[in-house]
Length: 216
Image (cartoon, rainbow, N blue to C red; front, side, top):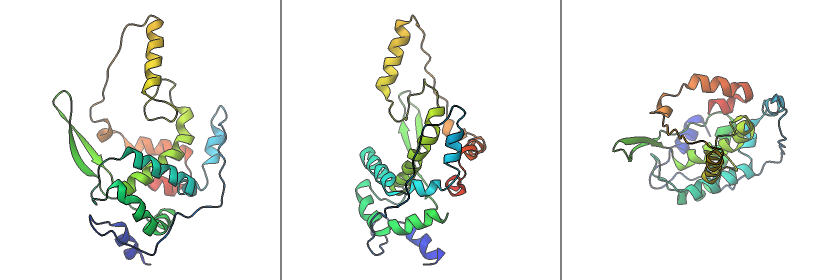
């Protein structure tokens, strides 16, 4: 299969997704153990200077990512594919998609822009990736969590494994019991639209040695 065929395969249509011979998820034989990092974080840096992408596409990680994407449901992306159509599509095309990822040839599709009404009367612009791109993003996030989670603030509760809004409420109750009476409600305007990606990439490069992951 040449590069044009692979690119054509990745472009899905709203009806009649491209099909190859049926392929199931391929189970990798390499085992990656993740131990706790040392105080200076060097263990984590050394751990992930190698084949991180192989860890991302490993069967167990991909299955966990799939379950999370399905549980979150959500709307379709620019290709029109719904969450309920993802598994049949993967059965037909996962082998090729995985090859594209490992060879650094996978290209995410554009996001679908939608407007969400805000309580104050304004509108929040959202970009909705395709369900396939959401699957790959989730698989990457699960591995990155193991690299970076221990570096985050103890006061951070959003979108972190093992933490929830209930934990944040308990922490707030503890502060109240200690005598604190002020609360600051803050929302950075258009943060994700204006975030400096050069700074983010420079920080990622310090812990991630797999250039294929950085390219994604």
